[in-house]
View 1 (spheres, rainbow, N blue to C red):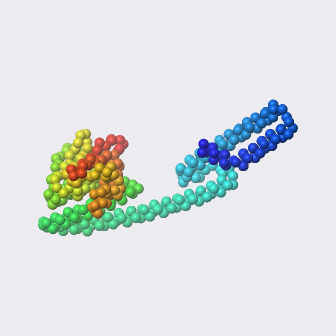
View 2 (tube, rainbow, N blue to C red):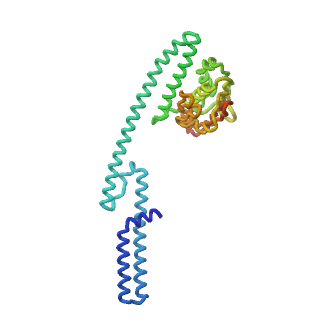
View 3 (cartoon, rainbow, N blue to C red):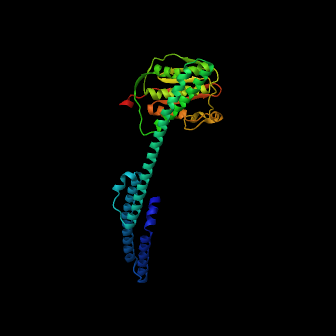
Length: 329
């Protein structure tokens, strides 16, 4: 109805002229006092011709509207295939659209170039900062003292933050480096746990983990990041108790802690970018990026990640590793 009213509005001049002539015809017939049969026939004929004319005009208007709508959805790619304008005004409008498309393409190209340059800079920075971090780790590992263990723990946090930056850049970049094949899940978990061994000892937290003896179709590097990030969060918010790693049937990796837990109102949003929740706002170090990256990565790996939690009891992060085989076909 809205389109039809718009059509009538576009031809209101022609409609007004038609109605004017129609009125003149009726008045003329009345002046000559013609019989009703003689008046009815030309009136019906005029109305019928008007309806036919409007139908053809509306059909053309509708087809033009559909063409322009479809063109607008892919204006950049299909602009050159636009049909020939029907009037000088349409030609003027089409020229304006061409100019806007050119400007839009230029803005997008400039933004893409700036984004690539920025990504290159931060990627270079991340790789450069890894060198002094590795040097500090080697120096600290040469001695065994409470101070060196504390500094190694803090250095581990820096390494994870740097790795988080690099992971974010890779996810937001145009390409990916996923390599899907079957990996030993225990090997991936073991390497992740090894990185946090010092933190478990310093925090006097118990780790409950027994080899699960499973193979998983995934990308080792990206899944390792997810597990490490979940373990990092568990350590951050668990003051006492234990952290458990196990597998629920058929193939769901669970990382469960006895920490402070997540409030019910925050739980549905913990995988959103930059969402820190009530406890996260109290902890100024929280960024709201870690679990968001985990969610993005799991989606790309065709895994599913979710959380169960109860305030004061703890949190369980579940990663469904039942990957579809067709992901690598």
